Amino acid sequence: MPMPDHMGLSFTPVEITDLNTHFDAILTIMNAKKTVQLTPKERQAAQSASETRLPYIQTAIQTQAPAFPNLQPNFLVLADADLDLKASLQLRDLATKRNEVNDRMIDFAMASEHFAYEYMREFYEVAKRAQNKNTPGADTVVEALSPLFEGQGDTTAPTPTP
Image 1 (tube, one colour):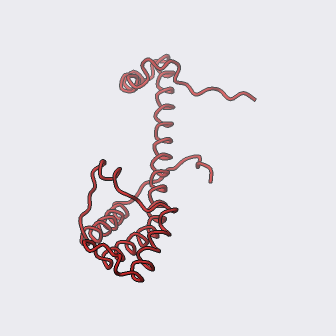
Image 2 (image 1 turned 90 degrees about the vertical axis):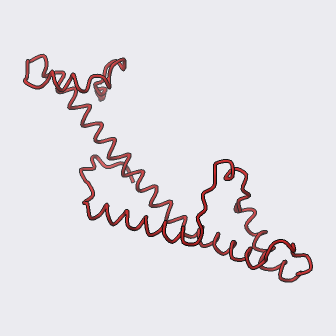
Image 3 (image 1 turned 30 degrees about the vertical axis):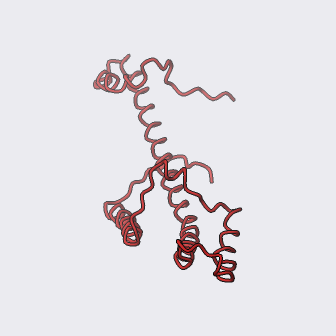
């Protein structure tokens, strides 16, 4: 879907409260299980179950280890590994929805910021033109916004060619 031509929307305080409440509920559920916050180094070192590894992990935990209990590591518990696998699969299923929410929030924010910036830039350009006509307030607006554009050259949008 292409970018809209404007956003012109905001969230109500109730909607923001609802979004925060739902995010808090997710964090509460996750933290009630166990608080896990890996450092960047730990994340890098962790062995993830990539799409190519996952079938082997499933086979080892669900089929081979139960069939050959004599080969199970005596310092690790198969039941815990099975629970870890199940949790991983459940979180993978939820990740699709989480990613969609994240993408939607990023898209909303980017589009909103784009149009807010576009308005500010056009407002600034109008104020610069109004300065030449001694329009009240134009100097104030240009003075307030000009630091953003210093050293950037011409700030007007290019004129489309037919």
